[in-house]
Image (cartoon, rainbow, N blue to C red):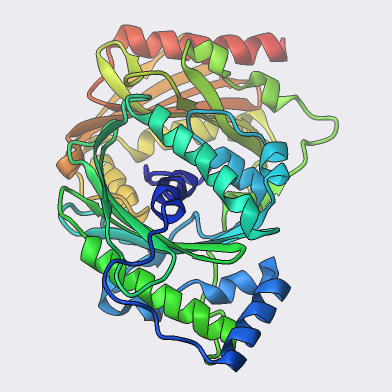
Length: 440
């Protein structure tokens, strides 16, 4: 599955802004230029006729950011945001797709750009987004749900809401803004985000600027929001022409396929939230196409209780499990053996550091690798790679590979710290039990 930056979900950001808007905030310094009658009529007509297909051209394109997005790449989360996506954005309270549909949300679109180096004390991501509703009357209730969610998020899963203050948005009608500081599990540095939004009838549009560190990027956010508002008003009243100038990156959803017919039930072999213990919930799962394997099933998890999830004394950053069906026993066995060989010695440590950097991660140093073979299934190996992740501190990625015939269970655990051998064997035992019970 594509990894996600640990940013505050957009639904929660938007929810915070409703307080300013519903209280009549309209930009404390200055007013937007008055529109002509013709422009007003065109604007109202365009809003009434607006569809989801129009949204990709309305968000800011990369050139609109200038130097702010220099060297950045389109984020994996960019693209259409249907109501299922919106439902998944609620981290703490449960909001169903049906509830969101009842509140009139038709859909949305997001276009973000992120710095692949992920360095501290600099802007690491910028984005703009738009949500479209059946009517303006439907928006407030939807955003109020998000406000409830963010209130409940503080302290859950290791998240800490350090600061949240309202800021003035000058020169834009119906706009509000906020500046926040959030501590994230597994990160030594907090994330500062400045975000604002503007209402245009049944449309809500927003902008966010993120920095890893405690620097304040409110001024940059206001500039982005002003650009977005200008683009929206001009596109709706016909005074400017807009177009789509971006190509979305391929995502795991592009590879999603139905479960194989006649093959083993890989989903039943995967770890479940119940296996991991209280507080764990399913994040996402599904079957995916792969050129080398007959079938692949991937499942990710999220922790939803107060405090951070731990294994032993180490704080858990993420857990995911993948079940792989190979064309033969020989190829399955060779895959595990080759992965172990890939990370052995100094050359293996350098290879891992290069893979992390190429995948958009930070520059890691002091890489060490350890291997543990277990008597589980037909073949079992645990690969532990520990490194200094810059401002994130000393972290470990643990890969637990267990084979039963031509099926491999591959579980990845990312922790802030290290895991003991007893902890490793316990997780491997859970994976082996799922695999062998289902294939017996």
